[in-house]
Length: 279
Ligand SMILES: *[C@@H]1O[C@H](CO)[C@@H](O)[C@H](O)[C@H]1NC(C)=O
Ligand SMILES: *[C@@H]1O[C@H](CO)[C@@H](O)[C@H](O)[C@H]1NC(C)=O
Ligand SMILES: *[C@@H]1O[C@H](CO)[C@@H](O)[C@H](O)[C@H]1NC(C)=O
Image (cartoon, rainbow, N blue to C red; front, top):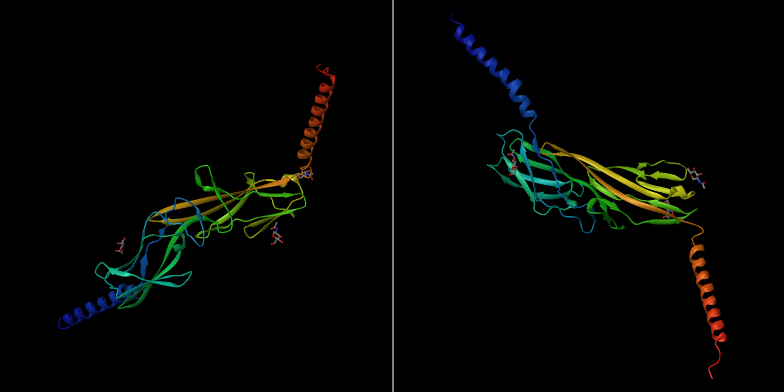
């Protein structure tokens, strides 16, 4: 009886130790930060390195410690592709940090790293800014087909039998889009004369059946706000094969017109001669 209070005190202490070990310790070692992915909203899909296409909505990147007890003393955001740093604003009783991109462009897409200085050390979180597949029109001209800004037609390629054609698919996006080529709406058949080099097709034109509509279909997929989107862009390229007899038709027209002209002149001359001389 005399030792009971002592025993009770000990068991409470033990329970406290167990609680510390099993609840607090793992929580401490797992201290981390989190943020949310964002996407740039676009109404078109043609962009250039020099003049990146602008999005329709501002983006507010945020980042917060997972544990709501942890306060932030300083927060920075680093764009991974060029290591450019942005200073974040600490808001919400120092529990949240934000950075607003008022006018995002396709250039802002990519991975970001948010780093929070806290009394428990540096916590960081990876935050992506997604963008749908885009056609890079720095070196090529693309025209939307009809009203659809996401189905584009590139310049026509014209060659003759024996020539060669390279079809490129200059696509960007985050995540990097996967690319698939089709010909006349069927999967592209590769051969010694039709080769795939990365995303470029190299065609050695040996046969007129190689003319047609080649399409590059680019797709990427991402989840923002619990909603998964699958975005597609189609770039069409038409290959024409100049017939080796192509010069025949214009030549024939010129000869026919020349013959007609001579016939008309002869007919007129004949009629003039037949007319009796007026007296
Ligand atoms: C941080 O702030 C942003 C922007 O106000 C908000 O959308 C986000 O939910 C906040 N995060 C937390 C964990 O409070
Ligand atoms: C296509 O690419 C190959 C390999 O780079 C090159 O040798 C060839 O000249 C290119 N053809 C055309 C028509 O640009
Ligand atoms: C062109 O290719 C098609 C299919 O590969 C073949 O059926 C056809 O005979 C070829 N034409 C010529 C002129 O070689």
